[in-house]
Length: 414
Image 1 (cartoon, helix red, strand yellow):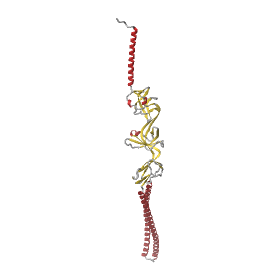
Image 2 (tube, one colour):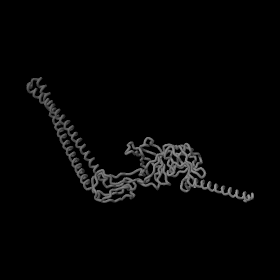
Image 3 (cartoon, one colour):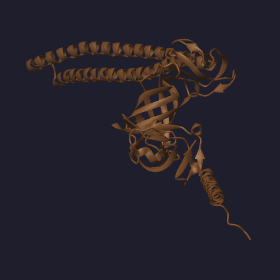
């Protein structure tokens, strides 16, 4: 016959079962909690970049691509068609005004100048001969007029005497009429000579004027030929740096061809292009910032905007405030940011990868978690962006790329 267990033994057995059950439940709960924690997405703090929301100024900017070019560049073109004899300067050489750049074969230009000089001398001789001939003609006519004046006076005197003698009955009517006719004929001849003299003067002066005008034209052609020949010596007109020059000795260049460029590297400007979508927002006088590298940014001002849009691109030009900065180089590529607006003392945050759209989901650090938050952006610049809603001053926001976690509302921060 079995005996009942002692109460102490039953209590120990019950306690053992309770303890075992509690431990098992605790182990299951711990395993479940660990599994849930392990399944939640996480990210290491070292793998992200964050920035804090603060107050300050924000500039709204439009980004463009720019090229640094000299503010002043002289283009040297050939005034004649000639062959390159030798190249004296090379790209990168520093030159002063008057220095020879290259030598051209100017023999044909010299022949043209000599021909025009001979034509000028010939025309001057012809004018001198014409002048002498005119003077001789005028002198002959003037002498004839003087002689005709004497003859006229004699005939007039005889006519007057015959008229008096006719009254006295000493000469016949026929003789008196003959004397009067001779006097009248002398008057007509004198008048004709005087008119011939006037016509000779007028004709001679017209011939001299025409010859002088022709001579002036030929002299201008000669002077222009001489000037072109002088220009063909290919001298620099200003101090500067040779940026380009004809490279082949013996090459034939045509009249008007560019043979060299000389840049004044003491001052620069930027030629920039951007999408024509933003063309309506550009205006002359707008400030710009030109970023040469991560450590160098130069301020400037838009001076001109080209009216023609080519292949969906608008081009504009800006003068730089720091024109003589040492880092500037001809044809250096640079990022140009056109400042279209400015807000002072507003919330701002370092831009990073933010601001891809007006409304955007970002991750904000909340304790040891990253919480997905929708933000409405305002002014956006190249370095900072303005949050209009969704963020507060002091919030720590992830500014690095987070596309791999699209749709995840929370991330564990390790």
